[in-house]
Length: 329
Image (cartoon, rainbow, N blue to C red):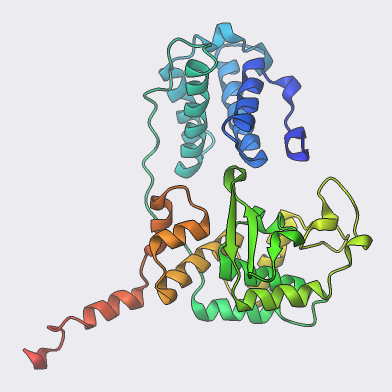
């Protein structure tokens, strides 16, 4: 059991909840972070239900009470999220998805329930929003800031920023890269994405140069701690000579955004993933299927959010209309 799973207080959970978490790991092949989110969502759900059924804690919420839950009870919880917790629609949608998966498991896999009370549970309608991303010029600004030699870790930070902006990888994927995941001859690397799925990312010249430059300054592996994070194998290290953490990378990018004069409040590491996808689509004429493979999306509909067009492209399209110039009429 790894560190992420150890943070789940299983001894406080009902047995059927822990069984679902095990099922998520072993059968659904969910990542430790996904399992933590499932646990967090369901613990909060059962805290609400325990209070509703006048029980002291969720451990007391035995199968006897589980079988009494109705769709109305679940709707009451969703209403609680919206009104009392003021949860965003996206947050409610995620929690509802967890509840639906959980009750499907109870009724179809564990055979604890004969009737699935969440079968007709609907997800809140979400407004489609244009993903936020950096323009090409802003991306160049960010790279220039990252390459500032006043920062003693500038080679590491520049390599991190370069990989985000060129490869569109997820934060967890970047943090998990080991040196031996990189094929320097073929200019490619292997990363572990969502659901522990392995995929290949091809590295362009900028990525190869940035990685090679950083490796020349990275402490040798025999000087790095041998720990549960396999820090000695990690590509990116913290100042403590351990595998760099998600939080440290987020802080690096936030600081760079601020120094570049960009909106660090509304931009994040994940927005760099949006940026990479957008730049490849707008400037590289990348096929949507190739983009899906590169980003590691299971569904093409997820990739399609990156096929948005800029205001400038819309304006150019209107200007390109042969009827746009009254002199030609």
